[in-house]
Image 1 (tube, rainbow, N blue to C red):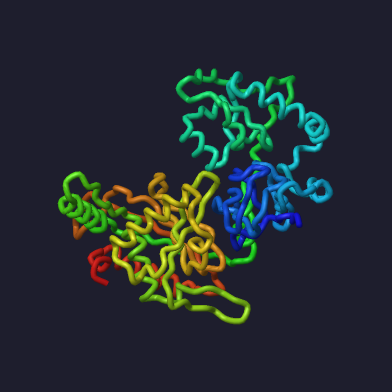
Image 2: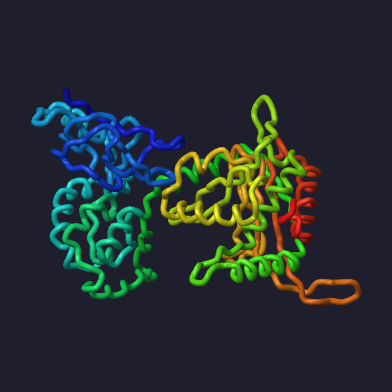
Length: 428
């Protein structure tokens, strides 16, 4: 008997998902646990696998559709089974895209079928001059097929390029360069130029919700220290020189970043001041016995926080290798949900972007986050002399329900001592 398949919960924080691509087409046989489609959630692109065996009789949510949890996406049943009644009852449920503005909603709805047909006809003929909208999966397929996405007209929501648009699309080699589009200008007597509309991605919706909740419900306060980073920089240079010298011929040596050294130092400091490795609950403060560090990683749609588990028990090189792996998979949206959950303390480093100092928003339910700036060259006083030096500013954002000022200051004092005497990072 035919069965309507609903959108499952593919990650703990998922509320809706966007179908990136179908791996089966109508009429294909499917078995239990076979890959049906890929779904873009709030943090990653997840595999949607079949819970039943049979034939994929009807796709109710085409690629590009936004579907909420529990809403129908397809129908699976026996070959040749009539599913018209089931399809009719479920076809209108998935949300095709974020709603258009009221002034444009009615014309857009009336023109949708004709626009989709026209888009398919001109996809290979007309260059695209606006913002390129395509999921990471579609961009990956385009690279593999040598497709020039600037020459593809998207038929998904708001012109988004979906997988089926790549069929027969022109190659990157053959594609002429699109002429730059002049920026709209406002004259004194003319109307205001309309803004570019960028629909919220799954990730951006989650970021907006969680950070608003954090600032509204968590009483933040901030502590900043300036660290003498001269010896830390020298240690990093020496470690990388030793790694390069010991690497085999033709082997790319592992390199240690300043961020890796800071991650290791934070883990040691949290062992020494465990009251900063804590979170608030309505009935108690939980002081964690594990040191699981959430590392903020910038990705295309925002940021994610993969977790380095038991960082206090890992060597510097193990941390360096793990952070690189987590960051690479985060940017490719290949992290598993459990790799981004249950951290105990966060680190956000914007030094690589030239930022001297900033304050970060706490990542609930954690009790604190450390914001790290760049290493600055500036004069320092040594004895009676002024000499060239290196400085590093760090700001600790604290949940005042968990961490008092003296506790936060004690943690930063311990962390500064480790960073200014960095051989502790290697031997602690």
